[in-house]
Length: 117
Image (cartoon, rainbow, N blue to C red; front, side):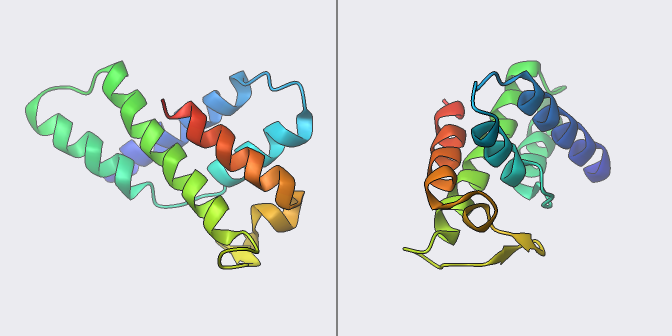
């Protein structure tokens, strides 16, 4: 069940990224870089598991789980910034601000945060 949920979440987040028309390729790349670079997806899996105890997961409930993952990615991008932890790597990859610059990382995090609402 956990593996299935993770696959669904990863797939839906990938679809979300492909559907974005952000007009600035670097912004879209930065936003999706941190959202799609792995992770356990425990927050979303926990939400979906609890829902499934009561009834099948609806499309709207899946969107809530995806929003939680976007919020988590946003918080990691901002936490890695030089003014905070100044992390160089996350999940063995360069952090967003190393890969795209601090300004683009801030915008990518803000974009993910905005998409959660």
